[in-house]
Amino acid sequence: MISRGLLLVLVVLTCLQSFTTAQNSNGPDACCFSYQRSPIPIRVITGYKVTGRHCTKSGVIFTLINSRQVCVDPEVKWVQDHMKRIDEILNNFEWSV
Image 1 (tube, rainbow, N blue to C red):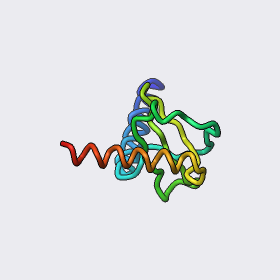
Image 2 (cartoon, rainbow, N blue to C red; image 1 turned 180 degrees about the vertical axis):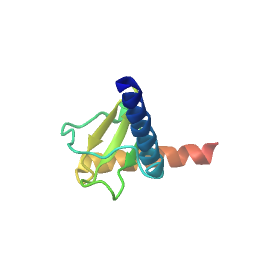
Image 3 (tube, helix red, strand yellow; image 1 turned 45 degrees about the vertical axis):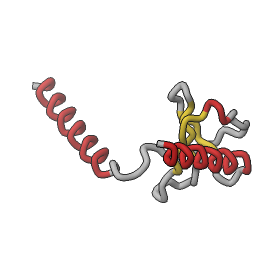
């Protein structure tokens, strides 16, 4: 009897979690709660995304060549420079294809 009740609770919780995840599927997957302070070499960055308005702290998430994601402060100059350079590279790539 207890195991059936526990199973029912787990199924309900799983359904609720899936519903919550589906509702948030339009926004970014993550928010930043802390930043890496030291500069990241641009050669190891494969892309970036800006966190959404629903996040309490603005941030940029750099994706590295090893698929790791790192939060950085969008107000810091080296971050802005990296974002600009990545945009230039992607823009030039689109024109050449």
